[in-house]
Image (cartoon, rainbow, N blue to C red; front, top):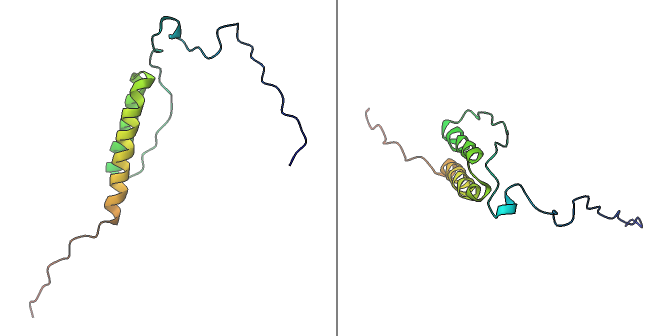
Length: 96
């Protein structure tokens, strides 16, 4: 354990401005802005297609992000689950 006292948080925002985001003044959400996150290809077409959908959030306000994130997460989980599925048994070749 440390005996150091944490430094106080300094609020350098003008009174009443703390926590406000652009667009809050009128009660409107802030405009969509690209996050600029680079996505690299994985080499698995189904996974790459799911991850490509993340680019949609760049054009959506923040309240639209959860739907996309949940859909991508669900799709990636399905892809992982499919890896555990056992392939159907092959028919035996009984030719002699």
